Image (cartoon, rainbow, N blue to C red; front, top):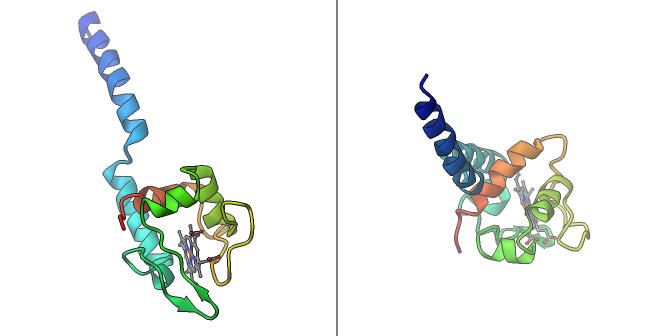
Length: 121
Ligand code: HEC
């Protein structure tokens, strides 16, 4: 391998890395959509719009930009909401919103979060 080629390769990697870190790739979005359809759409609808009455609770609208505004643009808080059913202020979310820890991995939850950001209200 020539030194020029190596240099070009390293440069290209350096240019591509920030873009990769920002934009979820198609595989992540597809995985997130499949997980959402399987686990979440029964209560939040396949559009993510929610509004379904479940006992005394109403399922939340999970679409952008409302959800991210509620959760202060923080993926950490969103992850906690899904894994542990705690709201943005660490109060328990209403039943029957499940805590998904033990059923979904953090990586799977991140795939779902990436997908939710593509659902616009
Ligand atoms: C059995 C019904 C049910 C299922 C299944 C369910 N949810 Fe929920 N979810 C709810 C209800 C009801 C609420 C509203 C709770 C509240 O307002 O305190 C909610 C709230 C939420 C919230 C908080 C939204 C906010 O505005 O505070 C998030 C995030 C969420 N759900 C994500 C998910 C994800 C992701 C899945 C699938 C992995 C899922 N939910 C599956 C019923 C469900």
